Amino acid sequence: MRRGREIKKSKLFYFVLLLAAVSFFTVKPFTEKASASGHDSYLPDTTKLLKYAHSEGSSTQEFSHAKDGKYIWKGIYSYGGDQYFTKYYKEDKSGLIIGNLDHEKFFFMNLAYPVKVGTTWSYTDYEGKKITCKISSVTKTIKIRAGAFKNVVEVKESNGTYRYFAKNVGLIKVYRPNAIFDADYLELVSIKTKITVLWGNSELKKGQIGRITVQKPINLWKRDKDHRLQFVRILKPFEQYRVYTYDQQNGGQYGLGAGYSVTKMPTHIKYKTPSKQLLDKLK
Image (cartoon, rainbow, N blue to C red):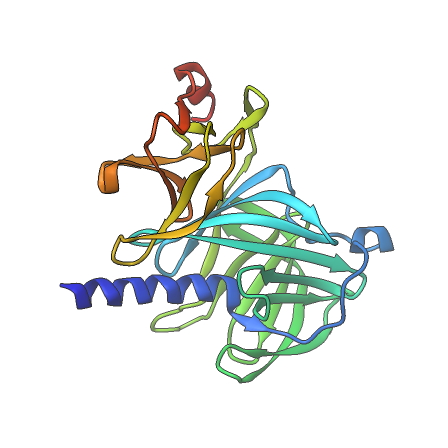
């Protein structure tokens, strides 16, 4: 039984790695947005929530913040369990690159500029193979579950993979025709406007069930694969954290996301829940 769980976890990690690391590149740093240099932008709209379907599982992604010229997005990949990841976009007149902050050496897409038929570049994939990319069309109309997109950029790779980019949306589809199992398959399922719901002075996140305020120093834990608690650091008084789950293990644990938790100790933390009216706004 344990062997089965290990296989399932390995498979989950593999697909997250594919999501965040289909290929890695050596590129010069990006210093300015392409739109500022007279090019159309293929960065996703930071006010939107994006949902994708993969060969197995799905992912949701939302903009978090900008730092050092990078547009940071947080995501959750779901396939028999949830795996969190952090990706970033950078764009200038040379092109668009999408990388993984959790594994800095991995980059899973690069759209070279100028966007015109014939533009060619190459990268080395996660198996060490050199892949050549070429823009084969800039006027495609692509119909996917998220809707119909016009003037889509089609990129054909030497390994048979096709990738499609829409202006101000980014990557909307990846597929390999006639593949028995297309591990790289991706399709944009929906684009929704991000709704910001404030709970006091902080944003109420989808899936959040409450928050804790630290009253006295308390340990922050992280569970290992066997659900044992590993010490991370000490949380300080007046700090606040979102709570996403609660269970009775180890004396009661408030889940703070990404495997982190705090023990239920009313003398050390104060727990509050949002009103039903606020929660309804996130539906």
